[in-house]
Image (tube, rainbow over all chains, first blue to last red; front, top):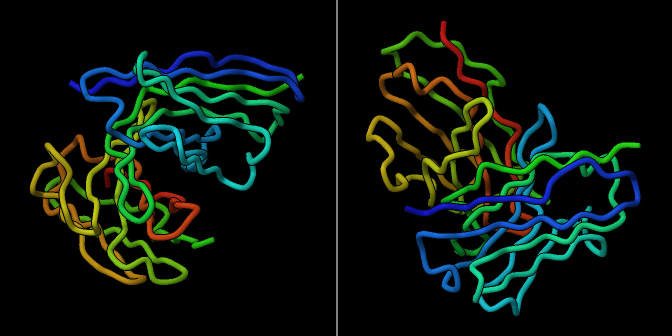
Length: 120
Length: 107
């Protein structure tokens, strides 16, 4: 059974940093693109970042470029999102998702999400 | 950026009836279109990819159609567990973008 479990969310002040983690199991992690998708409270879904199987390609939505960094450790079956210079508009539930690459990516398995709140 | 527009915003349907949800892209996305279901407090679940292919474990009452800029998700006979929010997503162009969602509620 595919499982994705996020952790690392919490309350952080504007301008602060946070590192999210996602522990994957039930599939060969190193064979899949992985992604982060977020959802602001009461709002829709927004793709945030993707990373290729070996980490050699990374893509970001414009609003987080230069502030967020996606990475992975295939030996630990883990995905990460380093978030710096956080803003109020980054407040959201952040989902880790397994991505299927076809032109772009769609997401076939999702974690339960971790809430990030940026507020003073 | 491709804008995905879903209609209607809210759809009220009785159990056992058919529901038809629409998704329009601001430019062609070919058949690179996915549909997701999200229930309150839960993560989204993939229903359809490639505009019309059901994901693993998705019941046959869910079907997708369309290509280019116009897409439809049809639920043939609504069950109580189908009342949720549905999102379309294009993955033809970067950034991959989602529609704003259609809330399917019990009439």
